[in-house]
Amino acid sequence: MKTAGFTMIELLVVIAVIGALATAVLSSINPIEQINKGRDTRMRSDAAQLINAVDRYYASAEKYPWNEISTDGETAPTEDNQQPTVVMPDTAGEFCGVTMDDGYGTALFGEGACRLSPESAWLDLLSTSGEVKSGYISRLENQENYMIFAYKPEGSDATMYACFMPSSGAFKREAIRNCVNSGYETGIKEIACPNGDGDGNYGIEDVYVNELLCLP
Image 1 (spheres, rainbow, N blue to C red):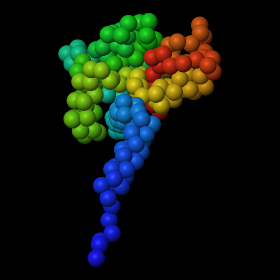
Image 2 (tube, rainbow, N blue to C red):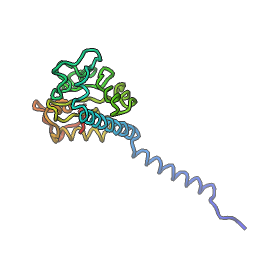
Image 3 (cartoon, one colour):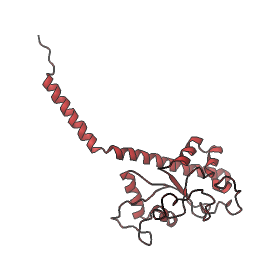
């Protein structure tokens, strides 16, 4: 009595079909885009966590962490930069060791945002005060290729922004949509959307050219 089963030819046909389907699926899913999207998702999460940590610090101290310490860790805060109403970073760069345009060129970005780095000593206050873990701060300070930029307009109740340059197509499209739809206040728009017309306006057909994605 013979047992029913696949012949060698049938097995080869099944394997070939499975291989063709796998190839079709892989070709439709861009692995580089998926990797970049995962990186952008992590950057968005880090940016949101930074804003939340700063808000919690302000709620308990009634000052922002950059009001408590200068960025070089040596020069004492002045009476002016201790006030929570000041812009971060101020025009003298006292709150930020490395400004946004350094390393990129002023043609890429508007000036005035703080690139998080080991020189941003105020970040350590978020860790020592227990708002976030030290490993998180270390990751923010030492990212070289994918960095977060911080900015807060003048006023103690002004919105703080945390921005990053997206690397995936999906997040780049979101960044340009934010610029096209004018969803940003004037100050942050000049930083996040450097490629509009003279008034910072974008056309609906504009494509991504180094725009930043900013939270909240």
